Length: 456
Image (cartoon, rainbow, N blue to C red; front, side, top):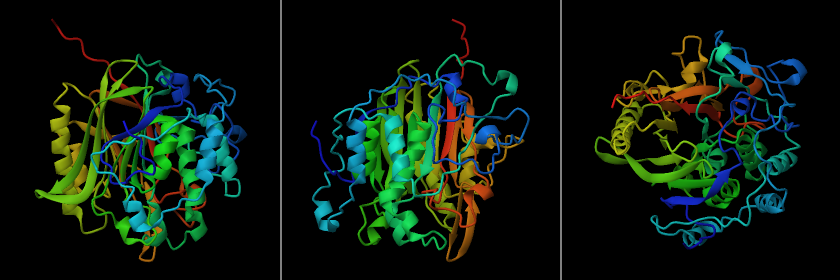
């Protein structure tokens, strides 16, 4: 297979390389600790949690929800990576400024949408070393508030060992660089806080801190020059699908169109099918897309279907979002019908509050989906107050737009990354010097439910 350097953001096929860290599976000890248990992270502060020794401790909204604090003395069960030069070489590459070269120069680098490309990786990077290098690059920025992992199980069953390894899933609209600098108008965010030369390290630091097995991203406009080589070196295989008419292209000195990206740990999974979708509304194609990846777990031989999408934004487009959601659900039913009892996870920025029709469609779907972050509430039925919070010229905007949906009959959500408090976010809201996007990352650990015994 040919290697393409600086490849096209119009590429619509599977890409890239190997797998995240060395977790062959999340052990219960690993899952029920803060994601940074293997090494202290000097940049993280613990504002608003007030745990002993400065550790993060989330206030549980109900008795059976217990936040589990990081234990710096607990040994990380993952094998150590060799301390080679690969992380340093990768860090040096990231440190170089990105040269866009202008629209015509970039266009010559874009292969046909059906052409596959892979990033060249000399050796697998050491994630711990790369995390420390990110922290060094960000040393002039304020410390990032630590977010605790919250168990959804009652205390008595909190340390119960799952029969099968858990899968860590991250959902995040990372804010397209062109939109952040050129269109979104974050009036309280300093311009230098949006500088890609540092902001990319904040995004990478978040991923390295939690080391998800599956990463679902929206508004990715630096896929080929940043995320593909970095994630490949960390052991992920990825896929990218650009919006056909990305608003990033309207911004001078853009880096190409934005789109959705899906990465998965090649150590944990093998791909069995990939579907790239352009969503329709009223039978007409729209500018929104989705990636659907069917994976086979190496440890259990069980399959999992994961989708990532980004629905139409802005007030007044509720009917469009509802139609796009209906189209996505219909096509997910077709895809999952290929494999009986195939569990499904759908991640995305839906640009829709829980009061919208598209949310109700997903909740009532025959796919039997539930929203993972409802489990943080006292009644298990209420979404967080916000997943995005920004200040634009039109005023302050706060709401819940981002979701991780899962098949509740076949999957169990074991832990969730809590939502930062208003105090932690700060008066200038998002993005900021310590939050790289106007959306918060969502993260959960899921496990397969036991299959029911069938009479022969």
